[in-house]
Length: 105
Image (cartoon, rainbow, N blue to C red):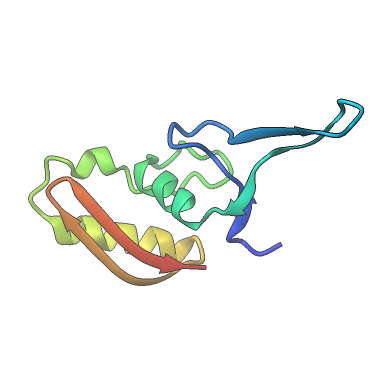
């Protein structure tokens, strides 16, 4: 399976579940599968180092950069972490309350 495919989460970071039943009422599917690239970007940007137990060095800790005037340092950290995750980063734009990322696996 490609790294960009996986279990989808809702905007509230909960499992995206849509139960489908067969004619006997048995569940045949439930978890939504799709492109998780943007979802992974959001998780990496918001996570602090140490929060993701499978990779304790993963995470940008966005809350640490909220008050910072150095937007370029924030963009560099995002770029580095996404590249570390295997993404090819085309561009990152950091403004007051907006982060735009163009990156793919």
